[in-house]
Amino acid sequence: MILSRTIARKRIAAGTTPSWFEAWGLVMTDAILFFGIAGGTAPYIVGGLAQSKGAWVYAALFAIYFVPMQIVLITSAMWAAKSRWRDEA
Image 1 (tube, rainbow, N blue to C red):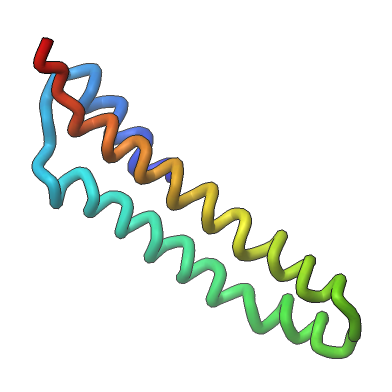
Image 2: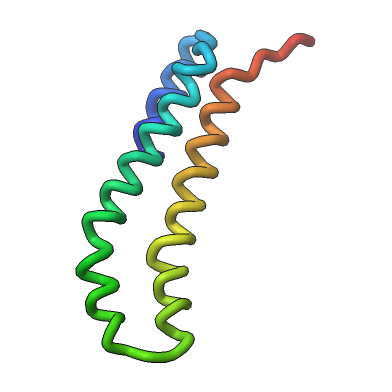
């Protein structure tokens, strides 16, 4: 999210329009970085939650992994789309 936002803001300020791959490649990079970090921390977090029982475990996993993933990917996609926007008027 930080990578795609920073580069997209520079491109918008410069007035350049990136190709599809240049814009959406940053979203893919953000996704790979997020899943790498989440995959690296998952054994420690899930290992601690495995001993517990109850619905709150699923709520915790939802809050720890799903919500941040949505925030990162939606924000990255928004900036990718914004950097490719061309006002025809």
